[in-house]
Every structure is written in structure tokens, then in C-alpha cells.
Image (cartoon, rainbow, N blue to C red; front, side):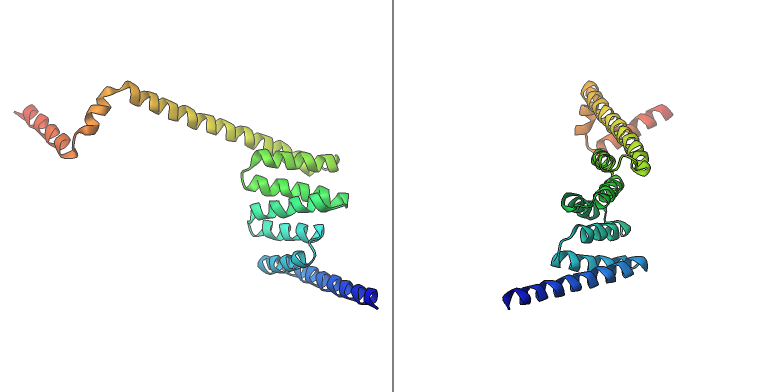
Length: 185
């Protein structure tokens, strides 16, 4: 009797999770992403399947919640036995990380997607773009660092800046006015 009751409870839980997933999919299809997120979160809370996490990630991605989406895609990759889900989740994780401007992490996700499905041309294409974006990001960071270093060096080399710092704005104004008046006479 106990085992029959446990089976019935598991069956009803699975059915309710399946219903939640179905409602989430309907909401997603209707572009009601907040509602889809709600349904997928409920389904994942009841039974954290890779499919629930993957679908939750897709809904979050559509809402611009890229970091949350990346976490759910990662969980789908880690917990799925289905190579298709793993590959698509790794690819979508790369997209979410790219949108978050985490280019190095997106590169790793695209590489993972390609390990899981070497024929995925979209992953290969996005990997190329992520590498380029990372390179541009590094160049921009280097330029900012160079500018900061130049500014610091200029401040150290120009002692007149230090002298003028201590003067009050009124003093500078008055001195300028006197010079102007002297030039007029």
C-alpha cells in the first residue's frame, strides 16, 4: 500500500510539474515572459529538471536578465544527460554572457557548446565574435590604463599645478583681473 501511495504522489507531482512547464511554454509562445518565468520557476522549484532550468533561462534571456539566464543555462548543462539540451544550453549560456559583456566567459561557453556539438556553426560564429569583442575590450582597457598613467605622470611632472591647487578661486580671479587691468593702461 505504501509503495502505491508513493507512486501516486510522484505521479501527481510529475503531472503538476508538466502542467507548469506547459503553461510556461504557452506564456513563452505568447511572449508573456514574466508569466513564463513564474511558471518555470515554480516547475524548477518542484522538480529542478534540466529542461525547466533551460526554459527558465530562455525566458529570463528574453527579459534581458542575462546573468540569471546564464546561471540557469549552466545548471541545465551540468545536470542534463541529453546531449541536445547540454549543447543548446551551453550555446545560450554563451549568448547570455556575451550580452553581459563577460566575453571571456562567453568564449568558454561557446567552446563547451562546440565540444558537445562540433557541427554547431552558430556557436562557431558567435565564438569568433566573442573573441573579437574580448580583444576590443582588452584594447580599450589598455588605452584607459595608458591614459590614466599619462595623467598621473603629467601631474607629477608639472609642479605649477600643485602651487595653483592651494590658491583660493577668489585669489586666482583677482590676480587675473589685476593682470588684465595692467595691460589696459
